[in-house]
Amino acid sequence: MKKWLKTLIVVGIIALVLFAIFRGTYNGFVAKEGQVTLAKGDIQVQLQRRADLIPNFVRTVQGYTDYEKETLTAITEARAAVKEAQTPDQLDAAEEKLNGAIDVWVNAVTEAYPDLKANQNYIALQDELAGTENRIAKARSDYNEKATKYNVAIRRFPANIVAKIFGFNPVDLFEASEGAENVPQVSFE
Image 1: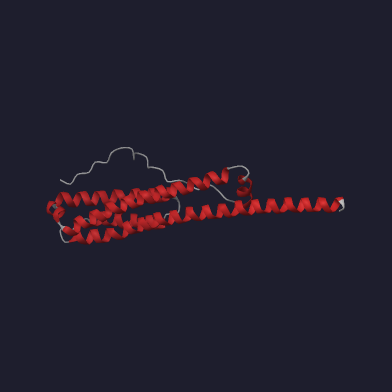
Image 2 (image 1 turned 90 degrees about the vertical axis):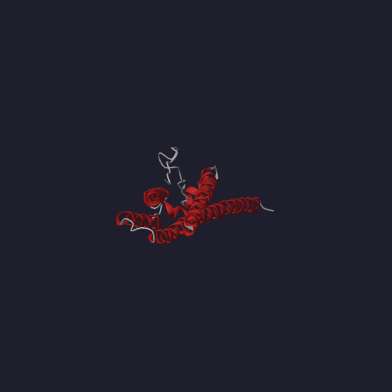
């Protein structure tokens, strides 16, 4: 066999191996990016679930009180901001605003109407909201886990070369809000 033919075969084999490595790395990034997107969607589902529970909560309490329009307007605006959030930072800010509005409203209503705490619908909705908060925390944890794996994968050498060529960029993680380390004060009296 001629020397140029052997060289051509070796170069062809090397090119095929490199192509397979690039293809596998690229497809791995696509899969990890898909997992991150799915995990982000799971967070949105749980936030939507919570947002959908709030009108039921309001209707349950409505029979007990003429609640403040200003507080409900703040809750409605915060719900809309959660739905419109695109990044983890925007979602955190919108969620913080929603939590604050809900806390103000719930505390004001339970102080003004102590017998409301015994209402079965109220208790059931409180349980649903607490369960949803747990689901949100779990979804955020899952997202952060998948996002970290993705971020690490696109930074490893030599895979980082493929990531740079095809535009795979790191994603943001959910972080605790400033002041989250402080224990919240809750009062139902």
